[in-house]
Length: 357
Image 1 (cartoon, rainbow, N blue to C red):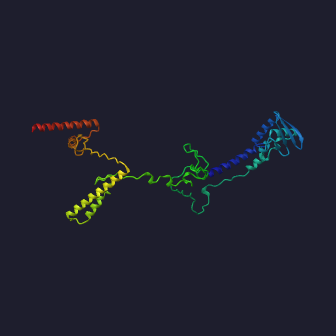
Image 2 (image 1 turned 90 degrees about the horizontal axis):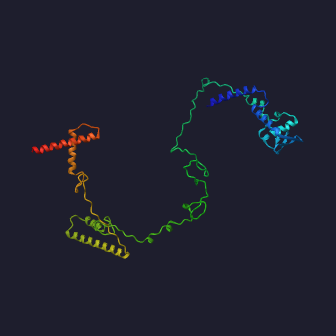
């Protein structure tokens, strides 16, 4: 790319030097064209000389301007901005009999153009003629791949909105301290970090205000409400009994059973008294009988599809039919008709065997 730019500049400097050498004007062609347009517009102005190279120019529509030819200044400010005399200045120049080209800035002259394109950009040999430096060639640096997903959007300022129409119109909070708390209505923080925020003990009611709770679990061992089978007091008594020698006399076993009945009775008495004092009724669970097993093949009760005799007989008939007709038929309808034919042949063989017997 740099080589193409060098060649372009070399040819441009040459063509510009050749082009300007053929021109005979004092000014550049485009500046001369603008000056001619200003000369035509000067016909609608009237200049009155006041002295000290100052003029009062009156436009045909009543507008008035002050022009100073010595300082090259006009009140319309066009002469100061462009360096080319405006129509008001040209009207004054024509009064004194001077040429407007003499009052144009020198940067628009032909001599300035020639000096700008005078430097010559010399030719350069190719890489085949370059001297060998005996050093390693210069390669581009390796691209470092950063961890994570690369970001496509640049980092925006806090007060800069996103161009994405799907994005939110709200400003981000980074760098902004004018946040208003919805609790104390003060600026500088939110309700999450409010210093006047009530503690959790005041916001959440205590357990004493909720009332005492009663365990409604029913034990599967002693059928008592208030605990489950893992926390049943009878388990502890049984564990103590089993911990002793396996050859325990019958009297000790009877004593253990009596102790178990006493613990269960005491537990029942405590639960009933607690429920009576707080006047809380615990609804009894509706124990539904287990559903009977039903077969999905013959729809009979007492077995499932895996143990169904009809299903096993049907599977045996299908396997025998595949042995008799092992050919593969791609069509589903043909396969179904072939299977029906096989079953019909099996039925006929069974009837023939029955009649023969």
